[in-house]
Image (tube, rainbow, N blue to C red):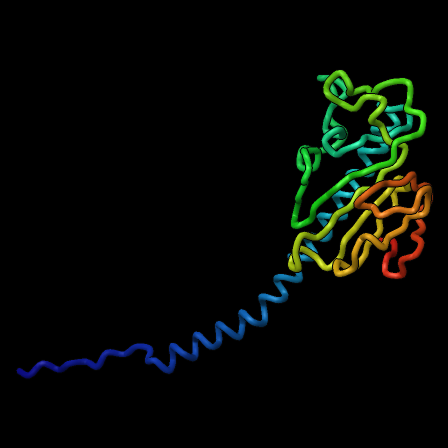
Amino acid sequence: MAMRVRASSGFGLVELLMVVAIIGVLAAINVPALMRARASANEAAAQGSLRAINSAQRAFAATCAAGFYAPSLQALGVAPDARSEPFLGRDLATPAPVVKNGYEITLTGDRPDSPPGDDACSHANGGPAASELLEGYVAMAVAQGSTSGSRNFWTNTSGSLFEKPRADSFTSINIVGPPALDPRAAAVEASRPAVRGDSNAHPVR
């Protein structure tokens, strides 16, 4: 009896090329959307970091330093005593540079002409001495790449949060309060949230 051979079926080259082309089209459509979603998440995390720093500085000033502020993120990570929690979480209270979710977080400030009489309550555990305390501060979140986010953010002693397009330099920012500054070089005792001399900078809504 003669054996009947069945013809094998499968994908041909044309079909495989069509599948690859469809996958490429879908990737081209979805990847930019995924990148935008990631950038938005990074921006939200950067704003959250600055709000956490504001809360930590307010608590530090109110309970630990007689109205003055911590000079660094690391200083906010020092608890007053063994029974207390640090003012700021470990994800931010580390030695510089602090990079989180694609943003570099920095803190700088202006020291008073006359330092306070007492050290911070956390000084015995490694916290700042009286000569290191600040009368005002500026905290910044700067995107570290084009995919990290389209905006940079900063906050100051006022507690307000500001934003600025990533493409613009921070050097043009003047925050109201003595003295006007380049926030990367110095800080200011900023008692009001207004921004002077920069039409591209505005409060975050």
